[in-house]
Image (cartoon, rainbow, N blue to C red):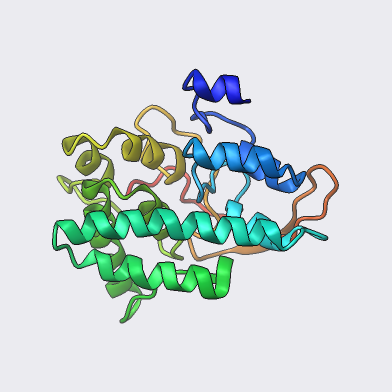
Length: 229
């Protein structure tokens, strides 16, 4: 693994069927977790298994307390970096990131951004902040915003987070947006939906991978696989 990482092999390729970080957590390989985190492995990917690495670390049966602590600290460190970058631009999104970072340390995988108002107002605010985060290259913030229970509909001529990231030459963020956010990749139409992307028609499912000891997850029956943000 170290040799592959030193050769700049992506820690989570675009078409990956499994997330190496989640697998390392699932099988309790502490050193592999540290290596992947040091290499910048994505922390908030839903595309592969509809669970983030933070959720996996908190809800595996018999998981040592070490792993949730490692993942909370990893989230805090990356969010701190993104908060500082937003603050350097005097951008108000820094306050959102600070609240999110505090939630992660206090309540772990239950952390989420909160927005005031009705569904339409929330959708507009998330959309606005997602565009700004993409333009600043705040990959983890973008990923965590994509967990909101909202459907986004792009109108004609409207700028997208992917365009914002590319215009600012934040290529890592653009890669993360294509891989992790439903409908953003211009080259892939059939995408697995994020179970928090569309707040409708949920059914309870249990992941049946490996030893089957992950918590029950909500999997969607949605029509939003190919929607654009």
